[in-house]
Length: 369
Image (cartoon, rainbow, N blue to C red; front, side, top):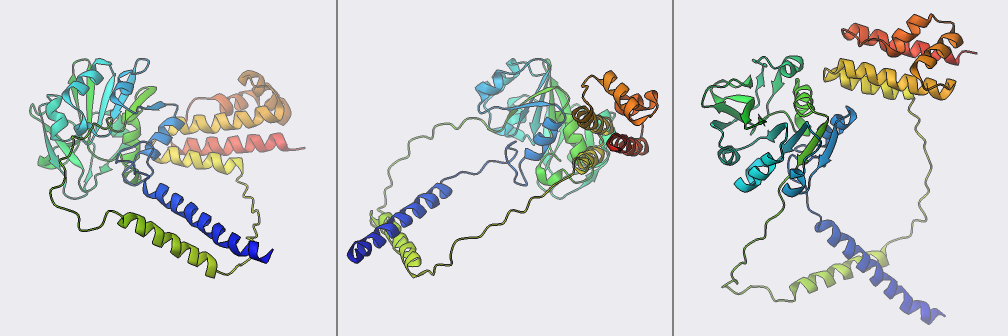
């Protein structure tokens, strides 16, 4: 029995070492997403922007190829391209033929501007700058000033078409031009995850991309086949088996660590439940919408959440029936209950705060014995 255990231990160590090598190889082979990718949470990604757009009711579809993006959506819809300079002229023709209501290009360079035949000069911004709207766009007026980051781009039209957020002679951080029946929006600043908390960047980006109920996002075109490389002329200085030798050394090192390591016993876990009150979660969403200037949407989110909880507690899902039940249960005036649960949107921040307080008081009154 002792002899059987003697040969079983090295086999188990080798199996463990092989498992470690497979995991390491899988991690090393996993690629990173590029900038502007709607699935990326890196500073240069756009996952935060997409999450808030989805929360506002925008249907966001990520297209894996130009062909998928060209299938479009139900009109009207917006098409966002993260790497416009990577597209060929025929791919641009295919996307424009799909008929998007608006085409938003994230930091397009001179290549994509030329392929779209836009009379625009592209200038890089060498340092972060704060710019006022400087235009009549209601979205820019609501967002206020924005802040650019280093390496962002500005655009100046040859016919002196005005844009929003001017950076002196460099041009505009946001410029809209017509291409046929499609409005093309050149957005050079303020769309990445790391820039959304600066000034009014989040508000302007959300309003620019959320103009329509459906949005198709093309992160990058499909990879193109690489040309066949010529065989290397110079011989390699390393023997052909050096990679296998490195893997064997790594396996031996892992086996040594497992053999010499001390057993510390099983890991003891303890569950620590965290309960977040629903009211705090709703108020958190409300503060986020308030920060990006979406007062009307914030009020609707607060009312919808309160009506849902009251429906679970009191029964009726119809708004008018719910008003009657709440008024009867709490003894509150029926018109006041109707105004709080389904009234007009607040006109300013003070009314929004008062609405949140009245909703909380009304909900607490239904819990009273």
